[in-house]
Length: 323
Length: 248
Image 1 (cartoon, rainbow over the protein chains, first blue to last red):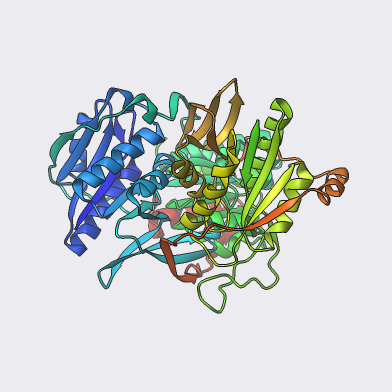
Image 2: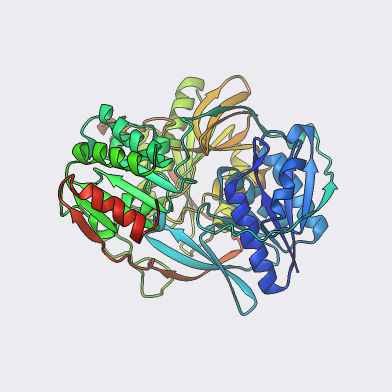
């Protein structure tokens, strides 16, 4: 049996979610006695691939192409499927990053494979891979199995642990011929956002809701986020009110997140918000209303006005962290 | 310009999910259903494209008779006609995409819109599967979309930023929140929708590639503790985060 894991580069650097995916794939390959290789695609990829050797890849396939510096789902999917076929890989893993989610369905169709998307656990039972994935924004989970001989899995970022296994990788360079027709949609430019971490990738998220009372008070959320090196999140109420951009929204019609620490400030905890964040490892809630549903999922709660608590929390943390 | 939109009929976001007796599907008792919110954004975008470029908006949904309620809503928003691809049996994303792709092949739209994901199974794969099955370009998680003659420039959300993506038509686009503000159906629209056609036909048969073994609730979280009720609690909270949770 052979496994292949796609590792995504952004600005020539491997994304953390890709290290998690490669490491998880290696663990499963070991359990099933499968051979394992990682695949890196892009332009000028050499520097990045050695790092994969420390996350379980003893063999890394590099496809370097001048036109693959930026994302194009049709071209990348063609390369992944071509390498998977050439390798005879029965299982292909991708991170469930925005790029991975854009590629996996195309790769699955090309390989005649079933796709289990956004998995939060993968286990081996009676020699079969069983995937667990959240549905209804995490209000429930399903255990699924893929019935096709070739299988594709995407792994949710921030869930699998990228434990290092110091080692080195043998690098193999391969080429896949590409024509202009392979580039159906092409990225022309990348606009960088606030510079803070993205909610789907962050270890810590500081999130604000209606309790902030006015959009101009959100600087209190941003200050605490910056002290902690955290992402800024928001409830649906404040996004719909136009206080915050939609890419910060956490919940069923926003992002489903699994950080180590989620700090909910002035968020009462509507069902659809709780669904999106209750798989966080630790939850801190600050809310005026002691009966707010958010306290049902919070590990630590402070019943109080966020406008008073937040400045104090930022000030004390700044001191404690020496910032 | 012919614009096709594929929509799903899903439990309302306020629904508390209970596992059904088969341990495979949800308990539908008392559950209200809605047009999946991202699909609603896709419908709105379709209407705007039609209003600017002329042509028609055709809405497709694959599922049981209950999907007619959602199709009727899209007609009330302003879509011209709807097609229900009937199938009451559960399908995985691949089987849904196969049914939709089969119908779209005959429809030959210039623009095909989906929501970026359906908020029931959160699979986020049907739109891109359909694009690949039809050999069309696709742009996912679209927050901005501008059509020029034959080409389209989109902005799509990625981690910590946006990609500016260019493609040609026909193509598939997956709508993300922020693309537009969907309209409410007007009374006139609701009345007009009653006489608009919903064509019904059996969905093309398709194999299921991903089998659900079990639907279950996530492990319950133990309720935590209230550290305090004013700002003097902050010191204790930081101590707990440091000593107990060892996070900072």
